[in-house]
Image (tube, rainbow, N blue to C red; front, side):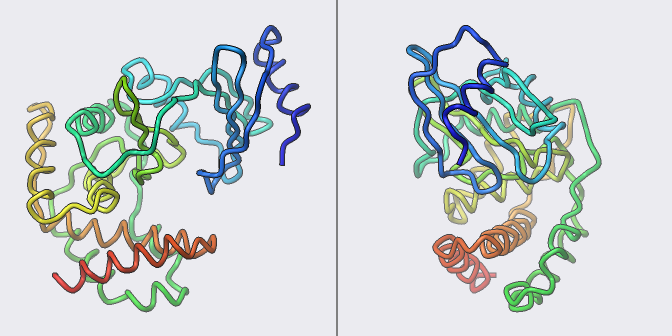
Length: 266
């Protein structure tokens, strides 16, 4: 647990004129240590990275904060693995997937900076010795084989679009936690929305249609419910294994039920 004195020292380096009135540990993030830090009239998010320093994600946030897609990175210290952001007041996204969220996702996907693409098989192979992976190995291999037959729809992706990383308030909807942001097939993010909002077959078709309409016509997009379902399998398996490795059993149980239901309908 970071002490008040340590947080005060960090904020003194950021802006010595600030007078902190309140600090609070936030328990929503599992990859980092996050703190809400308040002054008399402002809120800040202090993020302490534990796994890696997100060079790509931080650069993307600087651009997309200006477009009201995400919070603004205000100060960073790579040596200490810490960053300070504007704190976005609001609540975790609720049950309805709205058009504003899709519009902002399209903006992100059409970001001109591309990185080495995420290797989905590599990410899955990290868990291949686990009992969970072995249990779902057949469906994983089937989904991957099908994915390789589809045309790619490469874009700059968030790669962690769980509901906890989507914040809503009176001014709109915002994305947070860009630690895993990099180039990927945009269907990975779309599948994350399907999983997070538990979309049915009709809603999946509607998502693809709305997404396609909001994209620039300069860049091709290949709508396919079959491709979306394959990425839904992949995203669910990765989430289940990730939460299992961190002993978040309630998430594992919920997501396994969702995956089992999906498999039964395939």
